[in-house]
Image (cartoon, rainbow over all chains, first blue to last red; front, top):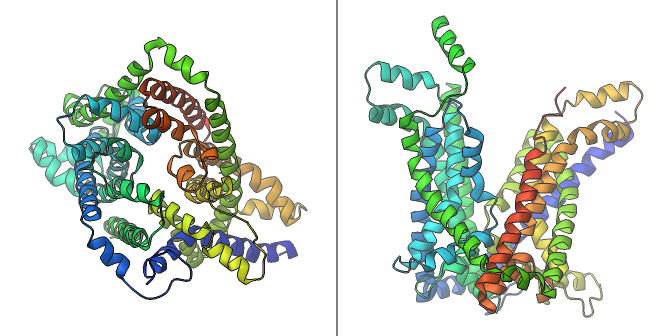
Length: 267
Length: 288
């Protein structure tokens, strides 16, 4: 082992940890900033008070926005799970003409710039004023998050032997019961993982929600975005810490799903 | 078993088949969803952009603002891509060579920001970089004369925030090409007389270039679409193309102009995406 190799390794690992600190830094400061006694964001904060959290919980506008965001994310997730999973089942296994194009189209919402989708959705939904504003946002988000569900379900189907469904059919099972007893158990972890990701993406999305907002349907990120431009307050730090907690929960949930998925294969 | 595999062989040797009717039925929900929420809305953009012949396009192209904004978008995105690639390469290399425990730590550090929304991150960076924020306070505490130094609402802050956001997108494609490379290649090069740095430079780096190219294109595509970060961390002079679309739609309420701009965005992103799809993906060049 040469000198450069011996010294190179700690240097590389040290550098990576420094970059890791840069990645972690924003998450590290948010919670302490929320726990300040002051009315201002400052560092080091004057500890310790939860007034920022109670301010948030006591503000009907912010609570209304939180509820709008939850409803929007739930609607988007349900639609994405239905459309994304059924598409993944349809395309499972066999190859067919035009497959690459179909998959490309299904994944395309990921690469369409958000601003384009936001403007397109705005122009589209102006024609459909009778639809409630939060439903419009949920519908627009459902397109955005369907590819994530499709990808995770497709991944969980990759491990399913097509012969299983074939033998179930040859033993007389109707398509519905094949779906229920063979396909569904196989895709359940994929649907769950995709649903968690879809919910998180919709709950955080700002640009589309900004274009489609109405006074009664302002999502939490849109309200945050508008108020951050004027002032940085501990109340926003409190909401940001709650969203950070939600992200950590989602990450942990996906980790659990991934672990569960591995177990049956190892047994 | 033998009978079955020959049957399958017969099927795959035939031309690729059509999708059977029951499978097509399962594609119905997604077809309806995409038809209503992707195709129809984009059709409205196309229609609105041409609603006055080519006048909306002419109007947009003749604005000096457009060229300023295009320059901003390219310069900011290219700087972000460059910085992100250097950091991501070091990070991916460390992930590749790390012992299992450190690898888990490094992996979770790069995954957590993936899950945090862009607003939460931007808020934190604004709080860190503001005039009485942590970073300037720390600099003063160690005796540095910060004078009138301002870290927030400038291009520097935009790039800090954007690199932070795109770093995971750069790390994973590079990591994927690196883990496909056989480390014994370095040993082989050394046994032939190369020094360690030379072995890494002449063997590992060229083998990992497809991953770097893929990561660079992906990061550049993501960077050109930024909307929130230039507003929160930048100044009005850092306006990017997405902000200009918003400016046309919300400030001067010219939806024809906004739609024409959106068409230009679609065209340029399509070119980049097609280029990205032609880049060989992970491992294709890295295996022996």
